[in-house]
Amino acid sequence: MTDKTCNCLADFNEKLREHNTEIEVTIGFPRDGSPSFVRPRIATSKIESRKRGRPVIAVPTYCPFCGIQYEGYGQQGGVS
Image 1 (cartoon, rainbow, N blue to C red):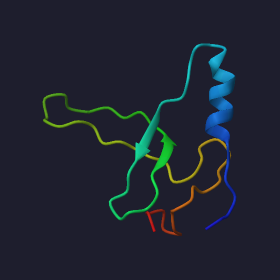
Image 2 (cartoon, one colour):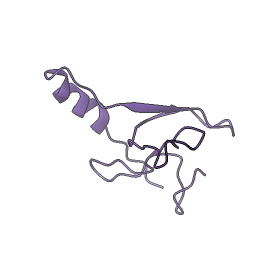
Image 3 (tube, rainbow, N blue to C red):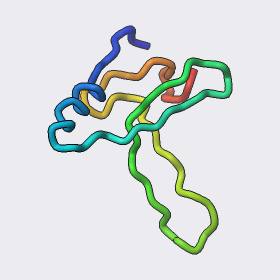
């Protein structure tokens, strides 16, 4: 795991603000007691609209802008 952190989400939202736009985020509260986190939301949609339930939420483990691995994720990509 890396000790680097990025500010890409805040930087991009600052640039988008002049266009009255922002990146949608997901706020996570892990069940294992780990600290909560904010990640950019990856848009998903249901393939078959007649099936019950909502589409799953996709949350990246690496920053989609700079590639730095987010804190709290191990080598296999799952929450450690």
